[in-house]
Length: 235
Image 1 (cartoon, one colour):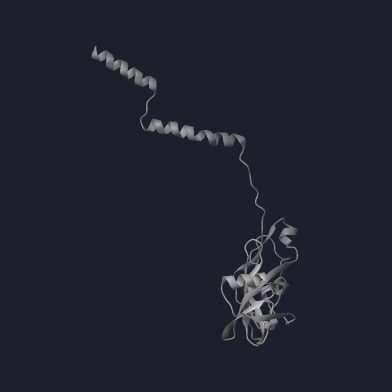
Image 2 (cartoon, one colour):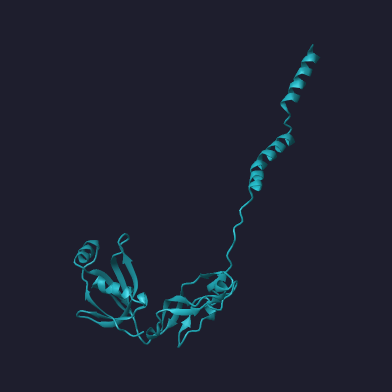
């Protein structure tokens, strides 16, 4: 991944909510640059330029040339961003200095290609379980995405992280046993017959009656007869 994008920044000397609000009203946003064992640097940026980077194909993994007015020029990438909850406007970004000769760890999107045989021939459903994996590589070797071919999958079969073959010196850091995609059968839902539903609804009454008899409850007529017999004895 070559650096084809540049980002201009200015040093920031103020902090706090008030100055940050004024900064945003003026069309800038606060940012912090850190990394490479150097002191963090407070900056201001044009949010439109940052959004252009985040919306590119490589997104957060985009390495660009950051030029600070009256300061350093360095390779950098966006490692975090804060947005306004309702409208999604950028409020703040964190940037990291990147050494192009040192390995870094990044998360890469996983994309599938092909139509699974289990879907085409057996009527199954392809489920993508893992949509990104973590890898280690040199900054210049960060791929925009990783493509996996699912055309050979039948129902009950899957592709795991350990099945991936990466080019160059890239190393997969995600657990090799994690499933990326698999094909599952369509589950059929069988509805109960009306007669079975009626029997199930009547069952509690039968149980209740049986329980009453087990507990010694007697019919009303029998109780009335016993009371009449007791009266005759008293006479």
